Length: 243
Image (tube, rainbow, N blue to C red; front, side, top):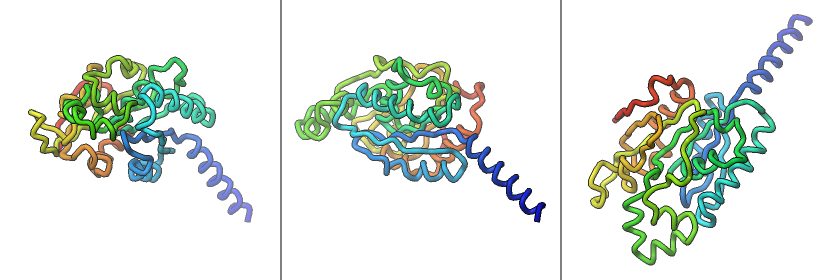
């Protein structure tokens, strides 16, 4: 009887301890997306031991920096449960720009600046396709005059700042399964691969997925899992192609 009780309390204590050790992973959808878009990643991350959450925001109705302010508020509330533990991020498309602006906001909690960042098909250098499509009134009507207008007009998002050097690592996963004749290099249908690169140290991987389908990719999740588990600093500058 006493032995069973002892084993029970040991199991309970170990469960509580392991729960406390779990890091947050915040999944951020892209333009005209929803938290549902990141559901598979969130579900798999939870299954594999992370405390994953999806952050939802009205992507068409505010500018990128305004979204970033809301994200900072969300992160500030998130760290109250686990102070001093790093927060990691998985962001798709424009979600990576919102995250970039948030990490450069003076009010952004320190815990968000010491984790790992995974960016899926981020338009870090703007989108030639978006600017071309932005010539048409239908596109401008769909995208509206806020963050969508920024996406179809800007040639660079350097004004949002840089991903902090305090981060443990940054991984960019770009897609090459696109057939956009306006883009003169490999692309995901929306972005050329070169438009997804950072000027600061990071790991860059290309997989055969489209801009929208990359969020459902098992290969992308495998890369996310590996990167969150281990990201040696010696690998951060390498550019890798994966089929």
